[in-house]
Each structure stands twice: as C-alpha cells, then as structure tokens.
Figure 1 (spheres, rainbow, N blue to C red):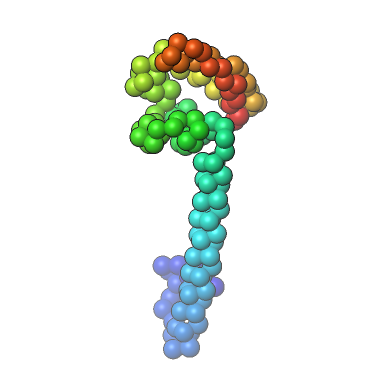
Figure 2 (cartoon, rainbow, N blue to C red):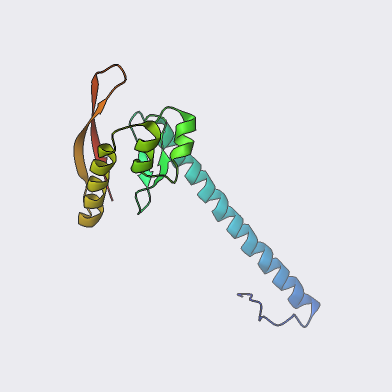
Length: 139
C-alpha cells in the first residue's frame, strides 16, 4: 500500500492499525537504508583521508568539493578551499595564477574528452627548490 495525501482515511480501526503498521515498516526500511548510506559515506571518507597521495574531488565547475590532508596539510586551508576554485586558491596563497590556468585546461580536457588526463606539475617551494607532482584528472 502506497500512502499519499490523497489516501482516504481508514473506515475501521483494523484498517487504521494496518496503515500504522505499514507506515512503521516503511519508516524502518528508510532508516535502515539511510544508516547504511551514512556508514558507507564514512568508510569512503576515511579511506580518502588516509590515502598517502593527493586526492581532490571537484564539481562540474571545477570547484573543490573534497581535498584530503595529504594534498593540503593545513586544516584551515582545507576547510577554506571547499567551494573555491584554483584561481581563488592561487590568489589566496599568492601563487602564480598560471598554475590555475594549467589545471583548468587539463580539467576541461578531461571532462570534454571523458578520459584521464595526466601531466607533470612543477611547484616552487619556499626554500627555492622545486617539487614535481604527477597529476591526474579523471571525469
């Protein structure tokens, strides 16, 4: 029985009881599904947080939805970047905006071609050295 706002009121006490039991069962099923989904989200989140590699998840407009601690160590900056893009990140951190241009170009290619795009990114360090990262975008 699928109850809607247009479902007539029960005519008897037995019908009312049957509807209450059905509603309780529907609610229990929904709560079970919601609990399983929450547990699964927590599991995947914990895996992504613990991976010893840079992991970032973007929305279709290339704004950060998630970034793990290996990619950005500072919790404050990790929290700040959610909902932002690389142009905003580079401006905030004082990085060369060309970094954002290159990343956006690779992101757009991955989305347009529906393929993995890899490139080597050179990032200058505060001590004057350069670190090299192999980056991947996957649609």
